[in-house]
Image (cartoon, rainbow, N blue to C red; front, side, top):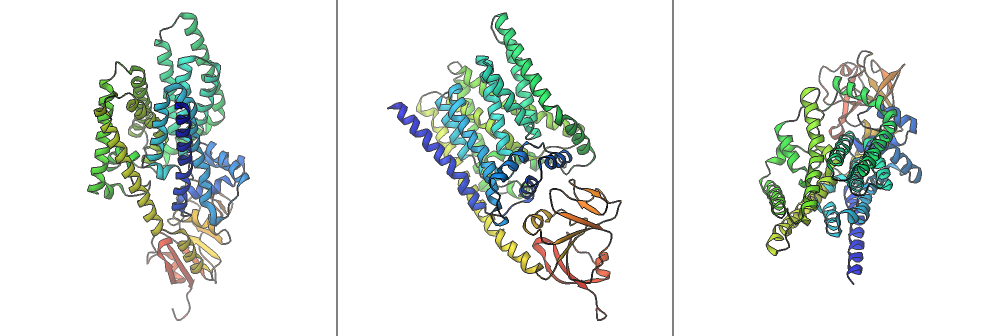
Length: 513
């Protein structure tokens, strides 16, 4: 009977785990942000093209390779681009499967259930899973890395070492924050293997397996190492991230429980008193839960130690990031913390599972879950409101109506970033030009290079380079702010504007003008 109840509970959790992100994706609709359009368009390139473009970008290529395979199976029209998010949702679904199998086997059913429930309820999940970016896959690979590192430590089986090698290698090829975390997990594994109490022959087997695994991962990563070193140099010379401000650091502490997305203003959010009370209460309850579990250390020593290691595996890579940020170049971005969500949840689950059995120890946990449910509801509501304000179909229709009597789109250097992803994805029929000089090669985007008179702004549309606008036809001019001293106004006049897209409809001046 107990086995049947357990099976039923797993089925229910998997069912809700499958449905929730799909519903959220429908709520988000087709309103893609810049990075999502970038991912979709890049996936339409060849495998060699993806390798080449990501080598000039600041992310490894594995996620885009996977999305490329997904596009072989499902090639959606622009009206259905939001369905590409299913590939990222698949990374989350695989996290749930890890909970059902290795997590349950290694840490028990209670921890397995807790991880699955927290993965569904934690508010930041609303933005991470249904998002055409690599975060959910980085979460999956890091959860697998930690689980099989623990399995290798406990059992020293060939299967565990092979799986560990595969997961850590995939994490390294998915995101650089995942690379750092995977590296530190591997270092921590070595430390615990060296201090593990076992006979010399067994320890020798452990160390040999560890070295072989490390060698395999190192050799398999060598093809990308040269690109990584070049990217580190490029980041030092030119990178969009600025030094973290206090409000960003404060928001980082609340990120996993926050009802706001990646692109919202942190300062205004931190001044929202009711939400801040909710988040601070959640954080305090989380800390109190850890405290109560620590008091029960003698009876649940292994779970608590493993939970501590989970948190250490997050802290060490973040320390590395902040040291690099302080000494070389800022590389800290709050959104990248999403890679560590599964490790954070596993650590919390291990502590919650270690609480004493008395009822008074469970009240904080019930309250914590109640606050998470409230936070999840607020996040879904915020998502629905944002989708109402930024309805993709309305914007698309506005652009079509605005540009229907134009064939050309000209970008100033300043305007080249804002909506090129959108127009490339939804309106490839226009002819695009970038108004720039030959010495302005690095002023528009980090993803481009100039070949003759063509600006290859991959993965976006091909744009012709020109040093001035010379046409007798109406055209669209895109710039952040049309200044009265802009050279375009010498020969052309504005007849209409679409401020939401920084667009101005221009026509040649006449004698009357």
